[in-house]
Length: 240
Image (cartoon, rainbow, N blue to C red):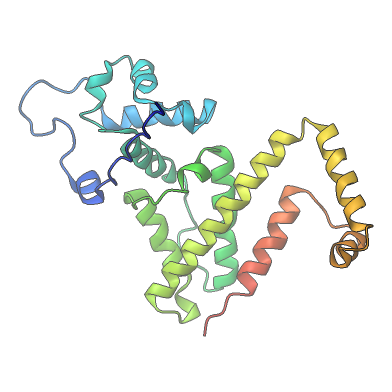
């Protein structure tokens, strides 16, 4: 018999997660052996070292020296734990004290901060593919970006969309960048891809591709490519 698919866990309730009282914080009963912050930090360290797939309740429990069941009073499932992890590392995103008023420059500065942040925590793009709630650290960063976008004249909803668009771009770019980094150790694969595209471009059926490949070479460094892509995105934003 085929094995039944694992049931999809219910979505995390942001009100309960961020505004709730948390585990064993009523002041009654035995003092907790761990804090939610310590457990979250252990999960982040594990993800940084081995990737998001390595983060399980059992592994995190082992990292902090706890029983697996005791962790469930701090985070009832992995989805909740990942929510906590994302907001935990978002505290590292410290923007300048105030926007400069040059919103395009400010937005590009935000994107550069996000990229550096995601390269430090390479599991973040994968974590952000699922809808995540905005914890306190994410809200503080969002507040800065919305203020930076005020000179655009866009309403609040449109500014939220711009932030989402920018974060999606950076996340997708970093995910691709990390994939390219991992593939850099396979020069034979890269050479085969170049031979393949060259052959396809010369078959006469792909004139647009042939023209694109014949264009002057551009820098393929991740930094240069990021700047080009970011400039096209931000400079082309319609604020009408």
